[in-house]
Length: 76
Image 1: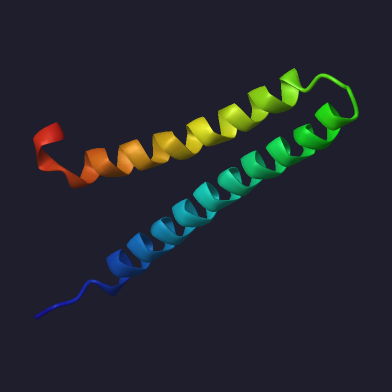
Image 2: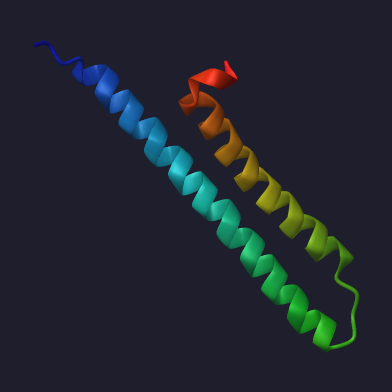
C-alpha cells in the first residue's frame, strides 16, 4: 500500500484553512450582531451592522452547502 504523503498534507492543509475560515466568519457575524445590540440600546440605527452580519452568515452557509455538494454524489 502506497500513501501519497504530499496529497494527504495538501488535503489536511486545505481542510484546516477552510475550517478556520468558516469559524472566523461565523465569529465575526456574531460579534457584529452583538455590537449592533449595544448600539440599538443606545438608540442608534444598526442597518449596516445587520447587513455585514448577514453577509458573514451567508458565507458560512455557502461553505456548508458547498461541502454537502461535494460529499453527496447525487448532486453531481
